[in-house]
Length: 275
Length: 187
Image 1: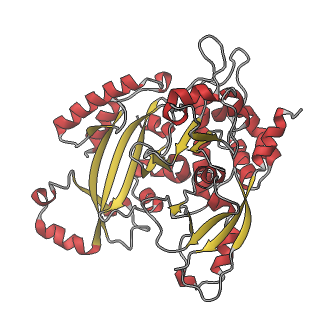
Image 2: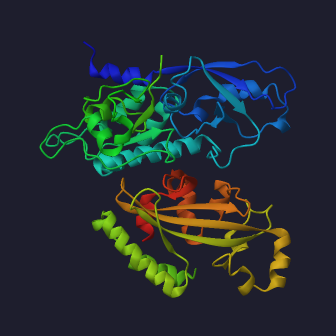
Image 3: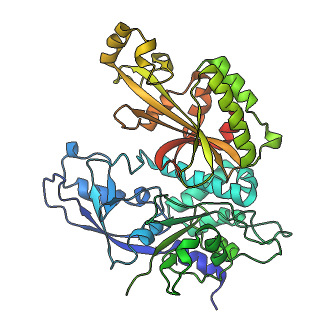
């Protein structure tokens, strides 16, 4: 029987085989071969693609290189979304490897945030963590931590160190014994078919009668059109980390075990794949 | 906007650390008061309703002239002077010759401010966006450069802890975000 703790490791070490190809209109001095990499689902693009950047820059002149950005089938990839979320939302129904196009020109200002440094990624990551704890614990747990603990969370993610990260993160997964869970569950629901980038609302893990709310309860409340089927046929897949959890799964359990390192449940709703 | 007016409006909109949480209804009530006052002093704040729900937010647009684009990274706040409350007033309130002289070496920056209620923090938060007139956003370091002197020390101690980047859902645009703890401190 799998221990719940094993789930944490499986989530952390999830990888997506990816093929990076340079955009055909980029000016190169020599042939730029595609670059293959296993991307960590729980990390961010600009954090893990230094080697990709170096590989393609070797084939280009200095003056033709400015800020790198990535695109999949015409969609610029937001570096501030976790990699696993981007894949589940945009490419989960396609065959592997994930084919990403690399650009160095014409940065799409309207679609993407600039990423001037790793500090930008750290600031964004910590900002998400703080918001998650505001929801779970009224920020009490994260504010009680020392600056070095915050640094350890970041370094754990940056250096792919599960134990280093969870030594601190476990504190963010605790709750008072008299409660049955967190105050509110940090979650975001993404769909490519809607104009709104994501849905985020206040939602309690425990009902007034003490029953644990499930994933199904959450979806029925905040995103009913995505899951109810008039004709009984399932329209969409509800995906977290590439899997479809059962709708009966308690939300509290999902929050403790299937959150991303930023402590949010990033949930993708994608059209049911036909194969 | 005049310093004294800004201070007094923040006070009337204030909440102290002891009662730092309040609901969206209270937020909307205080915003209505704030906007009434803003209209009285011609300060340009408006209430906007979000597209697909009853939520709303306060917004304001302001234009500034920066002297000389090349010194924008090294420049001091002294080189940035607030000029005009609205684009429509541009021709009416500024001496044409003044505009001509500075236009050659200067850039007009458009600041958009949104005060939004954050469910996560249960306080209002400030989002803002700085861009050139052609829509290009200002680099984050240029935004940090433009911060008022009295907040500069705090900002330089931890720039990313003060102003950070976040996408605000309702307006779907890239926008800078003043972290909530600072919103509380400023009030």
